[in-house]
Amino acid sequence: MKFKPTLDKILETILVIIMAIMVINVLWQVGSRYIMQSPSSFTDELARYLLIWLSILGASYVTGKKMHLSIDLLAQKISPEKRKPLNTLVYVVVALFALLAMVIGGSRLVYIVASLGQTSPALEIPLSYVYIVLPIGGVIIIYYSILNMKYPEKEEDRSISDTVQ
Image (cartoon, rainbow, N blue to C red; front, side, top):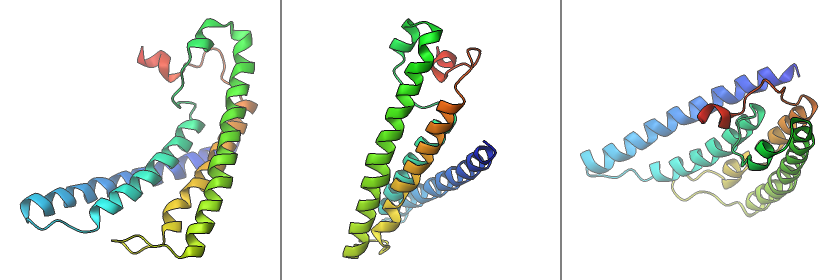
């Protein structure tokens, strides 16, 4: 549990940096297209790749904060005693998905793309750099899912859906 606050802070910092770069990138894209009448060739591709990283790392981050999107109709209908096993089941399924799809599948994707030497057209960076976020995000989601199972929410903790309502 000592590593969690450090990981949270690292993810927060990375997400803020990615978002700032995305804003600057998109502003440059709009400015070069409409003001200078000469669209930049790399900005569209960079925005796409940054969005991939932002999405995967953002999903990892919110898993750790227990703020991930969920449909909680069933959880609202059952008693508090039955919520803990349900939450455990949900975190097991999330961890299994992260392991199978993100870690194993993502690692295979990175390996294949790297062995083929694929690069992005405009930025000319190896696409394996773009896709490496899949196994990284998967490992982080598994870590947070294990922590969430080990330290379940207390009854007085409120979910994001409670605050939105």
